Length: 295
Image 1 (cartoon, rainbow, N blue to C red):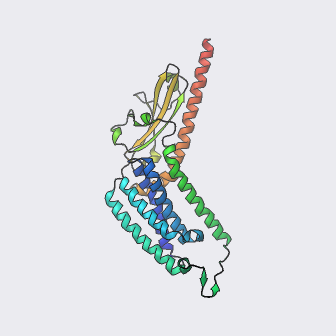
Image 2: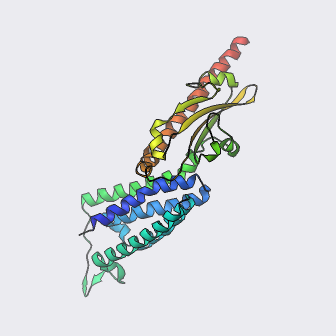
Image 3: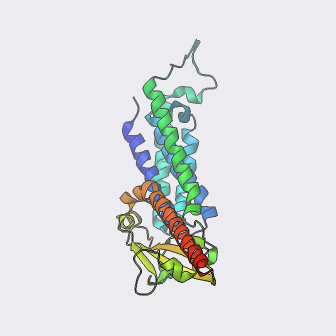
C-alpha cells in the first residue's frame, strides 16, 4: 500500500515552488534561478508521482528528493526569505528520510544488486491501462512544468531590451521597488502619434493603462499593465507594455502562485503578444495608407 499522504505532501511542496521561483526571479539572475527552480519543483513533483505509482521514477526517488531539497533551500535564499530557507532545508531533509523509509519498506528490491527474492526471480507485472494513463499524465505534467520554468525568462521579457526593462515606467510609483516585472514590446514602423490611436484606454499622462486584476492575487499584490510608445525616428516607434508589482514573499499569495504560474502568466503572454502584434499591424497599415494618399 502506497503512503498517499506522503505523496500528496510532496506534490503540494513541489507546486508551492511556483511562488518561490517567481519571487526569486525578481531578485536574482535567471541563469541562477532557473536551474534551481527546475531541480526543486520538478524533483519534488517527480518523487510524488513515483509514490503515487509511476514505477520508472521510483528508483531515482532518493537522489531526486535530496537534489530538490538542496535546490529549494538555494531558491528560497535567493527569494530573500533566509529563515524559510533553513526551515525548507529541514523539511526537505525530513522528506528525504520518509522517502528512504518508503523505498526500503515497500520496494526492497531497489537496494539489491538483482531484482530477485532468493532463488525465485521477480517477474514484473505488466502495467494496467490505468497505470499507463497515470504515467503519461505524470510525465506530461513534469514536461509542462519544466518548459514553463525554462521559457519564463523569455516570455516575461519578450521583444524588449535590457535598457527598456530597466527604464522607469510612467504612472508606477517607486518602480525600483517593484520586483515582479513583465516587459514586452514590438517595433512599429509608424510615428508615435499614429501608434497611440490604437492603444486602448489612454491615461492622462499619455501612457495607456490596463489593470490586471486577475494577476493581483496570484502574484501577491496589485499589478499594472502600462503601455509606453517610444519614438525611434520620424517613422518608427517602439510599443512597450510593462507589468509591475511588489513581488514580495507572502504566505497569503502562496496558494494562488501555482495558478499564476501554470495559467495566468502564459495566458497573459498569449493575449499581450497578440494585442501588441495587432496594434503594430493596424498602425503600420494605417500609416502606409496615409502615405499613399499624400502621394
